Each structure stands twice: as structure tokens, then as C-alpha cells.
Length: 327
Ligand SMILES: NC(=O)c1ccc[n+]([C@@H]2O[C@H](COP(=O)([O-])OP(=O)(O)OC[C@H]3O[C@@H](n4cnc5c(N)ncnc54)[C@H](OP(=O)(O)O)[C@@H]3O)[C@@H](O)[C@H]2O)c1
Image 1 (cartoon, rainbow, N blue to C red):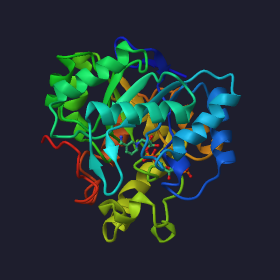
Image 2: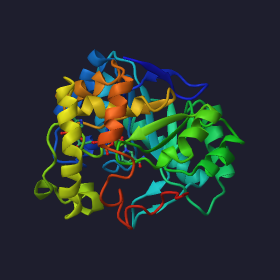
Image 3: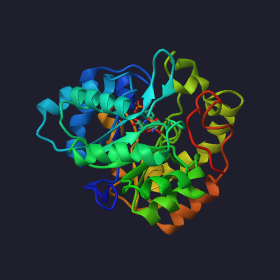
């Protein structure tokens, strides 16, 4: 498994991490036992970076991880996130008191006294990012977090934050069908020594062996409202992606392996955190951290799935609230 630094001053972590959002049932039902088997498989696969957030099941993902961490001798770098409040309705609060109480809650649920990385999940535009970075820098000084992170921010915001304190990581959606970070964010991260952590690197289950069936999406499934999974976009997206899936198989690779390896090939500072509920899928995802796509393979992928091929936006108008738009 390739290792990459979690920011210039951070630890070396596996280039493929595990996104633990699905443990809270985001993409279908699962059990704690299955989640623990998936986490145990990380140790065999050399996956050392785990990503979660308070809002993944309002603490459920962190609790499941915490109970696993108590029983394992495996050593992980853990990232979690705060700054979103779900009740009485979803809003953003990056104030020092709120962040402190959310961080303390996350540490308790995870059963640790320190996480390697703490992200602001969504910015609270009422508070200058310099002030929020100052709050997080205090958590670093107190030894509660190893590094500062932001999710879904614009390059200009990252530069403002980095002027106050090094930013270890920025996390944004990045995959074969979500290419916006190429317009400045990947470059800003590289300039500043910030790791770029790519979430939904499998397009929320599209660059894999079998397309998801929208008829099976449960009430809590994010994709129910995501434009790319609604007709007529969904059928058009399946048709566009199918040749890529055939190509991956033709190259003797699982499509998920090829899609994650493509993400890692876009920069040495990139870490991907595909999410899965199962050890079988984890194995395919981890494989991407052991291979390197050749120039001919990258060229063929670029031909099959050029930037902008996707039908529909990645978020609905409601889902995109809080994401910084910069192009
Ligand atoms: N910062 C943010 O705002 C934000 C937003 C979204 C996600 N994230 C983070 O990023 C992580 C990953 O993103 P994601 O879970 O949204 O999307 P993803 O990794 O692109 O896709 C997850 C979907 O792909 C399926 N899958 C995964 N590996 C597979 C494989 N090898 N073969 C077949 N199917 C496979 C999963 O189903 P199975 O469970 O059946 O494998 C699940 O339905 C999350 O867990 C979370 O930690 C962050």
C-alpha cells in the first residue's frame, strides 16, 4: 500500500483510506458486525486512514468505530468532522464553543483522546475563516487534534486559512465525474503542502462492478435526491460509464480499483477515501493503492470519460447548501 503524508507536517497514511459514512446506513442497511469486519480487513490491506464525521448518523459511525478501536491492536490515523448542526434544522455553526463541544463528543464516541485530523465539515459564513482556524489551532496546541482540515472549501478560503496555521488536509468530492477541484483546489493544496482528500471517489457507487438500482434506494439514501441518479440522467450516466467498466475488466482490474487508482494518479498529494460496508469491496478499493496506471491506460480513461461527461449536477440545490462555489 502506498503511503502519503497527511499534509507536510502530518503522519504518513495509506493512499487509500476508508470512508466510514456508510456504517450509518447512508447507502443501504448494514450491521455493526459487518462494519467491524470491514475495519478489521483494513489491517490486512494496509489501510491506516479512517474518515468519519459527527453527522454520519448523528454519532453512529463514530460509535461503531469506537467500539472497534477498543478491541483492536491495529493502529489508525483517524479524521472526523464538525461544524454542522442537524437540529432543529440543518445549519452551520463554527463558533469556538460549538466546535469544542462537538470535538469532545467525537473523541468520547471514538474512545480516544486525540484525532489526527479534525475538519470543518461545512463553513459557517458568519465567522471569518481566520478565526475558525485560530479555534482549531488551539485544539492542536491542546493535543486534541493533530491537524486542521476543511471540507468543500474554495482555494481562496484555503489560502486565507493557511496564512494563520498550516492546513493539513482539504476534503472535497473528486472522481472521474466530479472534476471541479482541478480548477484551482488541487493546485492550491499542492502549493501549500496540504493533502487533498478525495471523497466519493467511486461516484457514490457508479464506478463499480454493478450500477446501483435507484428503486432500491431507502429513505435516507443520499442518491434519492441527487440529480445524477434521477431520470433521465441516471440511464444516460450508466450508458456513458459502461465502456469504462468494460475497459477496466479488459485490463484485468475491478472498475473500483481503476477508478480509485485514477484519482491517486492525479497528484502525489492526493488520498482517496472510498466508502464501503464490506471487506470484499474494501479489497478491490485497497488494490488501487498497490498499482500504478500506465500512460496508455490513463489516456484511454480520458478518452472514455472526458471531463464534463456526467449528466446532471452532483448535488441538488438543497444538497449543495454550504459548499463553497468558486468557478
Ligand atoms: N466531506 C463531505 O462532505 C463528504 C461527503 C460524502 C462523503 N464523504 C466521505 O467520503 C467517503 C466516501 O464517499 P461515499 O461513500 O459518499 O462514496 P463512494 O466511496 O464514491 O461510494 C460508496 C458507494 O460505492 C459502493 N462501493 C464501494 N466500493 C465498492 C466496490 N469495490 N465495489 C462495488 N461497490 C462499491 C458502496 O457500496 P457498499 O457499501 O456495498 O460497498 C457505496 O454504495 C464517505 O464514507 C465519507 O467518509 C465526505
